[in-house]
Image (cartoon, rainbow over all chains, first blue to last red; front, side):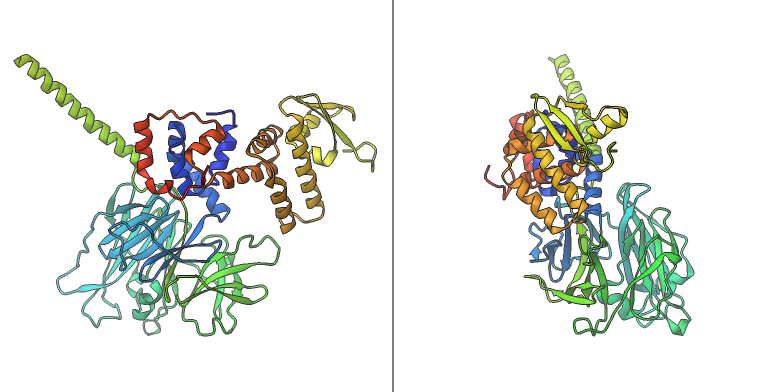
Length: 381
Length: 167
């Protein structure tokens, strides 16, 4: 390549934005295959995640907007909308630079906003268990299965006896999982009993609480208290690796606190970050979503802040040590929004190598056929 | 490590172009290659001259300046603070691309992790908005695409070629 040490050069490339790297594919053949290579893509992503760099905030209002997390200055509408993304498109998940989008309960898409590549999932119909029941609320989620290096979409459909059936005594569930690697859906047969109580009308509809929260290879939904059924608060977890449901242990909280689980699945590892104090900026919150820590958080300089989405109406930086709040004003942001954190990544949505091989094979077969035909012609001549 | 207790030990370094540098021990020990030289030769005399056949005087002087400042920052508990950022920005501001490359080659050979991290970050910042042609010249990359192949690669992500700085 050059007398510049290759390992230093690659280390430098891990620091570059995705747009730059897509341009640098044109440097030479070896750079093109370096940047397209799975190892490079993986390390580039790991570097961004570990240094909290190249993070973007996605705002879903009437349109989709991106905001640079470092500056949080202005909301930029998605520049090149692929045709299948429009105002009604919902974001229901974000993982490793990929966004999971839905236009309806059967029209799902995966989109990498950094490479602008889009992948449409095959349509999977919702099968009604019997003719008399109707479709109820649909939960969805998206995440990464680190064991099989696969991205998965989960769709859970609750069925109702009729429109007024909001209790869920007899309701059935259909849970289906899509695997990007195999490009196919499969149905999960083993469903736990508590799943049938997992719906409370306003709770899941408001603030996009029906969308699974991804962490450590697992998707999570909150099953709110249903005193009339004797059900307490539960965190329902769906493991994307073994594709099974379980219940996540919770801390013993008393009021509205923000807790962090330091070691996944370990009840004792929950530690309280802060309690929500009454204050002017978040005195009347109905919904609070922690989005990100400030850069340099935890390095002891006392500036430990967390970015919060309050009611889907405003963003605030909360300094929990000094108990100070600062409202963030983003130019061009919609009045109400859903928030998703997304990292820039080169993660591809289709296996291009595999596609090229198939293409090559097709061309090869075509060539064989042409050769055969031309030979045949020669014989005739 | 000093045999004379409180007295400051000086390390002697000799560059490829024959210049002798006298460097305070803590600064010289920032260079992994110098550190392992003394680890491997425990009974080396105090006035041993460490040969650096791959480094010339100019980048070495620059590297010593950088490491000296950073050793002091750490001693003063200023590591990671704005003061360090300010120093780094001043330090690199006047360096040309050629000087930057010389520094990288030397820092890579001497194996100084902190400085390498800083230099790669500087290069990444200088190159992120540059054109393909600029970057080829910067690293001395030979373009082995045919014009048709290059055209096809560029077409795949045409929008990534917009908004590029003038060379």
